[in-house]
Image 1 (cartoon, rainbow, N blue to C red):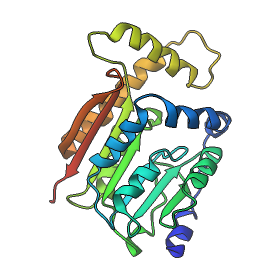
Image 2: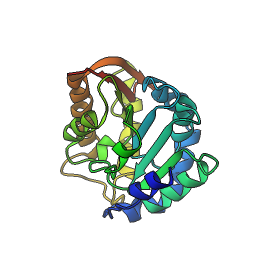
Image 3: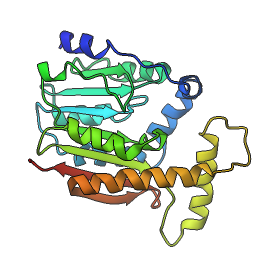
Image 4: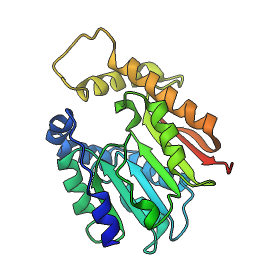
Length: 239
């Protein structure tokens, strides 16, 4: 495992948004773990990966590591969990959270170009999980294609993302959602946008989840947290 860790940590990609998300790492960590309904969602997302003991799972955009313990539960001590994120301060928290596990590796890198060149030397990838990350990508559908190619045949890709609710009680929920999106989109001082960030986010989420439905056989297609969070999981078919 030491050779795997060395290979994975070899690539590091700086991003302009690192400073912004780094400043908010502590608050994000609290939100990621304590928001009502979110811990249950994370457990459900890990279960949708349909992992078995000894499997290898990669989380794209692992943030402060809130999903990593759930994934480790699924693969057991014989499996491998790899979390990838580009922001140093959030990765520090992720490493602290998982320090007791020698089979959980937290790596700094770009989710669209994950630093996994050496993975084939150790294990195949049985599942990819990405929660609340595709909205930050320039081309989320293309990223989903790449993640599907990374996973072995019969493996799984699971997405969970926040977008506007379509439930009957949606208007007040969506008003709160828009405010959260604006406050979490750098710079946060803008009050007016030529292109509303919550609408752009909706488009990206729709594109990513639609692409996964095209590429995989559905194992989960659900909404959570007042209809705001969409969970889509798919099994890749053998060619």
